Amino acid sequence: MEQPDWNSLSPAHLWRDWIAKSEAQWSESISQMMKNQQAGEALNRQLSELQLMHRQFSELAQASLAIANMPSRNDFEALDERMGRLEDGLAQVQASLSQLTRVLSRSPGVRSEAAVKAPPRDRKPPATERKSRG
Amino acid sequence: MNVSGLNTRSVTLSSLPNPVQIALDRMGLPGTDFVGMTGPLGATPKDTIHAQGTLKLHHFRPQSDRLYRVPVLIVTSLVNQPYILDLVPGQSMVEFLLKQGFDVYMIEWGRPRKEHQHLTLEDHVLDRLPTCVEQVLAHSGERELSIIGYCVGGLLSVLWAALASDPKVHSHKPPLKNLVCMATPVNSDGLESLRAWMGPDFDEESLLSQHGNVPADWVQNTLRALRPLGKVAGAMNVLNQAGNEEVIRSHLRMGKWESDNVPFPGGVFRQLVKDFLRENRLMHGNWEMGRQVVDLKHIRVPFLHLLAQDDHITPYASSRDLVLRVGSKDRQELILKGGHVGLVAGRGAQTRMWPALDAWLAPKSV
Image (cartoon, rainbow over all chains, first blue to last red):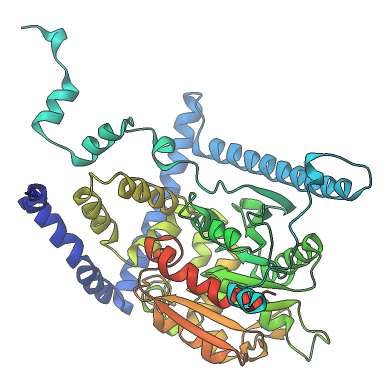
């Protein structure tokens, strides 16, 4: 005899199930409340305050970190920017190599992995293929 | 009392069962090994064939012995990582298209840095995208291609297609054979929440002067606020299916992607807020780009718009006008079950969207 899934009948499971199933309605209700001009104004006020706080805190933290001889967020961001430039440079090298390999593979007498022929571009959709075979 | 004999972890587990922890233990994975749990994302073999600043154009290695003649260029969104379309084997739209015999290319816009804060829509639509089109044609040796655009990528594709097809400016038709958009917003009247939040009181200049580009966490919080309890529901579902290894892995993959937003280029954000969101210029027919007015009627190639029924990011009210405004005789809209992300990467995508896309595109790619 098949055992019932007791876990799915546990109160916690049923509660989680209810939350998950009713989430769309809850989210929709909250979204409806936030879709008006007043909510927008309140959010924007909060955003401006947060930005100001963020700026002031960053400046304060940067000064403190500099005294403690530790890197600040700005230093990490500068490092990130530098890494990004390196990644972009590598991608350009990769693209150039790819083009070079392609040109070389077309040269007569070159035998390499790159010289593997590209598949022919003559595929037909299944229905057409069946028709032409029939 | 033998203090050294205490094992805090097992005591905690036995007194307070954590279904996710139990599932992870059962799978033999330590709780912090996220790479082990998700697997490498976006790992379908590819070559970068062109790079311009942060942009990379990838060519995926064919997985079929015969290809359709017309190559496919996927234009991804500006605010998300493109690997949502290539999560892992078996959960990858790119892999599906390759196996069906398409020759697939993809634009990765990359992560803009401070030096890219002035990049505008014109830079993307009139320079970067057309350059990628040329590169795809040169690489494939074909004279035309199909474009698949997702979300903001769809909007960029539509703008380019409309501008490049304007007969008053261009004597030749663009090398576009088919255009597919997925969850692409065109009418900001339908983006009620974003419009309320970024209305006249919203000071985008202050945000941009402080950061240059729109920070990734700001983008992420805005998208999450569109469905405030979405994460809670997701967590509850996972807890209830904690014994299912594949559900856990899939949830972690999606979670990793969702928290991996990229900054929004400042110039593009400014234009999208002013011209698109507040003034709805695309619908009013007065959106100018490079001294040309964007008119969707100029798009005359076969057109397909794939939409999700429960899309909270691109609601139907913001996307339904696209199929009505393009000038194509062959135009179609398909509304499929699911949400914005589920449309392209969920279980529903595998069973509904990808086969529908293949059935529409394959006969038009010979």
